[in-house]
Every structure is written in structure tokens, then in C-alpha cells.
Image 1 (cartoon, rainbow, N blue to C red):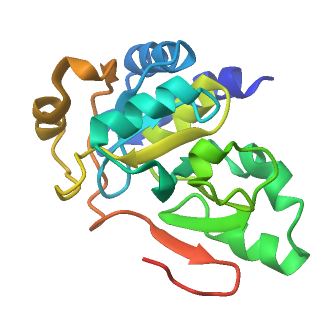
Image 2: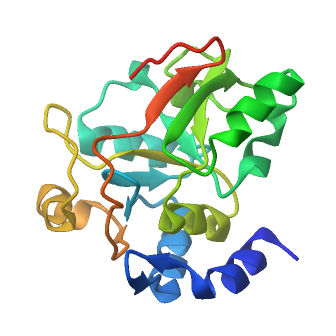
Length: 202
């Protein structure tokens, strides 16, 4: 069974807060992502903007929407740990267990990079920041897209991240291609960012 087919089957019972995830909207968002679009989605603590990490133009649009410097790099999200198998294969058994024990959840890890382009890593091509989010909407979006996604907070640089979908719409209006209806899970702030050496970067 493909990841997309598995997601379609599994997520019939997923709940977002007390609401069933609407697959019509998720499939529509995944369609836009495959065509180079930028979509807004709910995550554990804040709203995010997602795009295809291998599409330079889509990443450029995301940078322009946020007014973000390209040297800051992005965090990638995936439907499950298998999305980052090439990176996890470079870890020791103990390191891999530590990382996978935190997923799904609001913990991003700095891992060795094997395949992602410089426009994702901010020019630091040796490492990449990744996570499997705790929010089912974000995981399902990755599964329906068919791979990892850029996920960055849905706010212009200089503004705090938001838990309010209406604010996301006001900030970006028609400049984003899709906003998936949903809610954040109430976590305060973005995900943690950790190194394999145990350093907490945020």
C-alpha cells in the first residue's frame, strides 16, 4: 500500500481537536503543493506555510511571502520517520532511537544531510533540520503530497507566529494557494530544535 493510500485509509478516523480532518481540503492542498504552490496548515503550536523542498521557485515564493533571509534555512516535516530514512541511516543506533522516540511530536532534530538542496539548508549543506509533527493534519498533508515538506511559521518576518487562521489569511490573502481548515493543538510556540549532542537550540 502506498503512503498516500495508507493515509487515506488511516486518517478516516483522525481527529483534529474534536473535528474530523477534511480530506477534500487536504487533497486540494496536496495538489497545489505538487504544482509548486504554497499552502497554510495547522501545526502543534502555530500555523505554518508548506511547500515542496525540491522546488526552488516554491521555496523562493515562501521566502518572499515571509520576507525571510535565505541563509536562515528551513525545517522539514514528514508523515513518518521513513520520510527521513536516508538521514537516519547515518546515525548510530542510540541516536536513531533517541530521535524516533520523540516522533510524532513537537521536536525537530539537526541531522546529517544527504539529499536536500542548499536553498533549504541556508547554505549549510552538511546538516538539515527535520521532524515528524504531532499534528495529524500536518502528517497527513505530507503523506498525500508524497514526501517531506518545508514547514515554516505562517507569519511575516518580524511578526510573532500565530494560532489564528484568520490572521494568516489577512497577512497573505491570495498570495498563498490554499489554507487548510483546522486548528493548532494548543502548544505554546514552535517546535523544539535539538542537536544529536543534546543541545537545545530553541
